[in-house]
Each structure stands twice: as C-alpha cells, then as structure tokens.
Image (cartoon, rainbow, N blue to C red; front, side, top):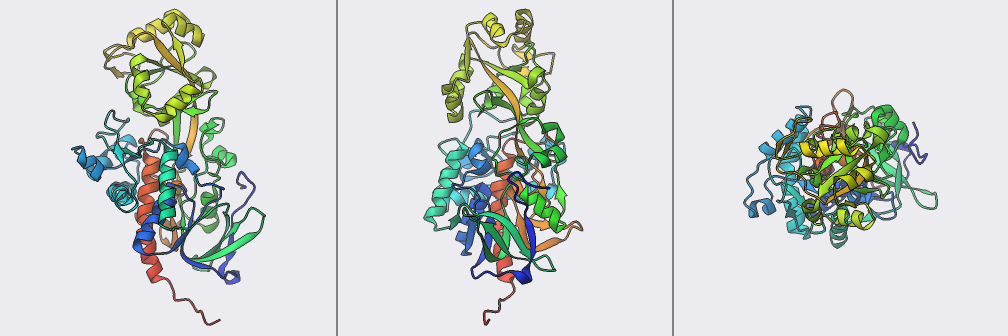
Length: 475
C-alpha cells in the first residue's frame, strides 16, 4: 500500500549493502521522541545520528500543545504536588478502561520523570507545572510544559539542546530503505536526498521514532474508517512508513484502531482551541443549540461526538471569565487574533450567530447551572454569564496511537512475540498506552510515549551497541 508521497519503504538484503559511513545508532525522526533519545545517548557516550525528512524538524510535537504528564519530577515536587507513578498508571488505565498495555503504562510512568529531570539538569530545558486546572482523567497536577506553553516552543528548546550537545541532525533525509539479514538484524538504512539521490548508512541499532499513519489516507480508510472523512490536523510526515515497514518485516502491530482526536479544531482558521476552556466551564452546542456530550470526559472522544452533529460542526460557548482564563495559552491568543472568537451580548445574539432557535439555546444554557445537569450528567460549578463568546469548531484527527508492537525496552516484536535483534520503536511509530479506542486517550499520552519512550530506547540502544558483533575492518 503506497504512502502519501508515493515512496514505498523497501526491505533490502544486508549482503548487498554498500556504505562507507557507520554510526552506532541511527534514529529515524527528529521529533520529541528522536531528540530525547539522541540527547540521552549523548549523555551515555553513544554516537548517533538523527535523520529527519523535513527541511526543519517540527513534526507532530510542534503541532501539539507541548504538555507532558509526569509524576514525581523536581518541578512537581517543588510545588508540593503529591503524585506517584502508581497513581499515574491508575489514571491511564481508568481512562482506557483497562485496555492500555500494562508493561508500557508502567514503563512510561516510571521513566517520564527521570527523562524530564535529565533534560532539565543536563540540557537546561526548564519545566513548568500547569497547576491552575486538571485535564480530563488526571488526578494530580502533573502536566509539564516549557515557558512558551506550546509544542513549537518545546521543539525549539529540544533542537537547541541537540545543537549545543553537538548531536547531528540530518534534515531533508527521507528514509526509504532498511537493510536486513536473514536473522532480521538491521545493518543499515538508505535515505533520499533533495536531489533525488539515495545515500546509505550502516548502523548497529535502528530506532524508529518517525511517525504514525494519520497522514496516509489509504491507511486511515483501512484502519480508522470512522475518521476517513475527518479533517486531518496532524503532521503530513505521518505517512505510515513505520507500519509499512512492520508489515514487510512480519512485525506484530497493535492498537491500530486507537487515535488522538480533538473536538475543538477552529474553522475556518484551522487552529487548536485548548480543551481547558471546556473543563473549566465552557460548553459545546450543535447547530440546533443543544449540548450533546459531557465535555469533561476528554477532547479525543469529543472529536467523534462533534463529527456526529449536523454538518459535523459545533460551537464552543464560554463567558468573559473563561475568555480571560484562555489568555494564558499562546495558541488560543493566536486563534483569537485570527478571528476565531465571536462575541455575543446575550443569548439572542448567540442564537443568531449559530442559526438556532433561541428558545432551545436558552433551555440549554438554563440547564448548565451549578450542580449536575440532566442531559449528560456533567457537574457545573457555576452558570455562564453574559456576554457570551463562541468559536465554531469541528472534530479532527491529530495522531494515531497504534503501530509497531514493542516490549518495555522499546524493542519491536515479531508476530511470535520475540524481539527483533536491534530494531527499536517509540513515539508515533509504536503502540501507545491509549488502548485500542479513541476514548482511551488520556491527555498527554502522545508526548508521554514520545519522551519516555525515547528515554528508554536510548538505554536499550546503549546495551545493544555494546553487544553488537565486532565488524571486520580488514577489507
């Protein structure tokens, strides 16, 4: 099955590989996962190279909110927040109704705090804990971000750290070949350069930190048909190559029906609106002026709820207090500057904006007062006050959460459950901890698997490099 840009990944015979350049660890993808792994390898004294298909590394990380959940970091402890990996695991499993891979949930919950602390201590990446609100499903203030509070800010700081650490990042290098022997040991990779030529590189360990398949329409149609017609708000580099390589190698795939959706993609601006607006008291209404789900359950499953409404659209409705609250999020401020926020003096003006019957909208607003409302069972702290504000949104597909099956050491597994000799995967290339559904996604699961997975993969890679066969250099 072809990927979106027509480049079919190839599995080639290692005996035919001709390459003069060798690196202990090759990493495909320079997003949060690849950069975290590369920085960890640098600290461990293991040489590596990052291969990035784009001219400038951004990927899914730059399009995200940049929020990473972690229990027990120094930043969290400094605020006196009580949390633990066990509590985090319980939250992950509660959100997925026990469908998250237990080994991965435990591995990530244990590794994420050491990963963030190491990035801060060794590379100067400062972490802040968002302690003004809880994202759906989290029982503690554990969401971490850089001062910019954006995914692009996180990427900029990771790239700057890689530059300072002299970690080589080779951009405009689209990996299309894996060179393997009969035992399925990876001996090298081939990558296409801007002029169309292919260069090849030998390696002892290969880490796939590349992508999901949200940007491959054929794979989405096959594996996530419910989102085949949805707006894709993720990175175009998510072309499914990791899944295609896995299929070609006979690797086991897992949780392919899991994905991160988002029910708050502003249209026509094409901007992500923070779900914190909903958790703090905002509501979503459809073209009829009616609410249709409990907005506090999570933004991922909200995508499906919104898409099921007339025209596949909804309106985020909130008041002045919530508008002030939203100003702390740079992404919201940018969307507001682009004209996403509409202002209405009262319910009648809002009904006119939406095009819905005033009486129905008034009934909806009346139900959303202090206490539990009868439609969805959501509990409100207070009623919305006029003037009101609204943003027209749709549901979007952001990132797939399934992929190559891996063990707790990030080793890719064959269909019989055994591990490939030196092939690792993490982040978007591998299965996550959201189970196999859209509603199993706990806020931050994507960056959790990317950063924790990259940190773990580096430690595994170090061990594999030490065990790598001695090469004959006499020829």
